[in-house]
Image (cartoon, rainbow, N blue to C red; front, top):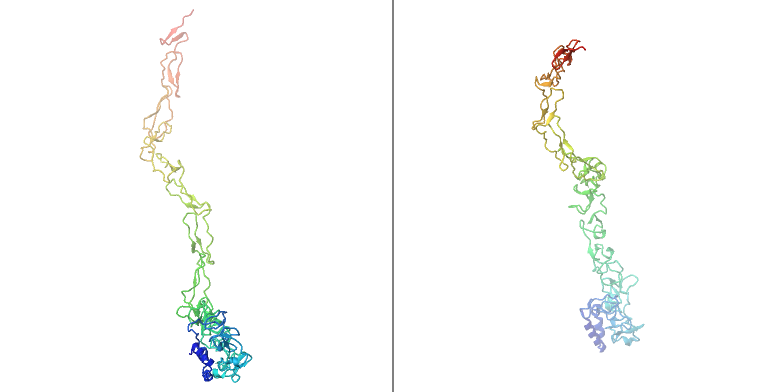
Length: 510
């Protein structure tokens, strides 16, 4: 490529009036005049030609140089090709006012409508095979063009603007070198970002970083349809179908990614609801749909007893996935039975708490082991602090366990201090006096030895002497009823009885 400095030297020679200048310029093609895509300094930043700044190889803001269109009157220039008037004077684009003004414009020796041109060459938009065929000295797309038009997204053969370098329509590939991007319709250069996949070629998509990337083959992970060559992003992978129906079929199943297939029977298609009585359903491995919702069988414990005494375990109904509400033992239900140690009490639930009341014991003095009824046992009572009844004990030795019955011939029984059994009932031995005589006409009774009763009270027989040692009452005899009877005064009527002398004394008559 011929640098712009070479062009300047060539133009200087033309300015000196070299006779061969015309033939020299005829042989300079578009690339020699403009340079093939580079800037004059070989390192300037490529211009955008529409950013409102003087940058890159531009000679003025967004015009001139090998990359942008020609500049208007008054804009800076380096050579006539930088100017729409094709005249650059003192580095400024100016119109021509006569043919003489075009002496520095190469073969463009005619001043027509203030533009240096050559009436013998083709106008912009007319056919050409090389730049020397055109008044503009630029032949692009086999048409004379107003600019070099070598950007990948610009052309001179667009319908409605033949001969004018314009950006190709939005969404078209331009010269194809921008792939995977499509031209924007407003810039001559290749885009470097995208907004949608419509900004990319058919074999590419716009990713989350707004970059066009090549479409993915089947089974590759994807987010949307545009990412896939198949145009179907299903279940997170590029798939052969747009929809893989049923929760038990998928395009992303391991080993068969990219085709809609039933999921294996290890895949959970309906998780446990967490209600306590539900079960997770898994795919069958052959059907696209999840099996019907099932529940744990009736009587399955879904909420265990808390173990605090007054809670109850809840069980499933078999027809619902929810465990019944938490419930408690009713008021009065025994939550801690008697320990069996004699002084414990049973605790019962309140009906409002799952906690069994604290362990209690019988009050002090409560009989925990009554008398056995064997005569020598004693009852044991609780101490109020322990649930254990005191050890079984017996009455102390000599304790009367069976008193005599008061019938005269019974005897009392006493405990021996080692047994709770009162000795067998015993009687006074035979001959034991049980009723003494009450006088000379009474007799004493003695026990029989086989009965507790004293014999019936007996008396001396009738007529039994019962002398009371008194003379004056006569001879005494028992009446058979226990009484001693007296025969009366033993003296004759004419005599008196002297008890002192036990004699009858004659009564003196006056």
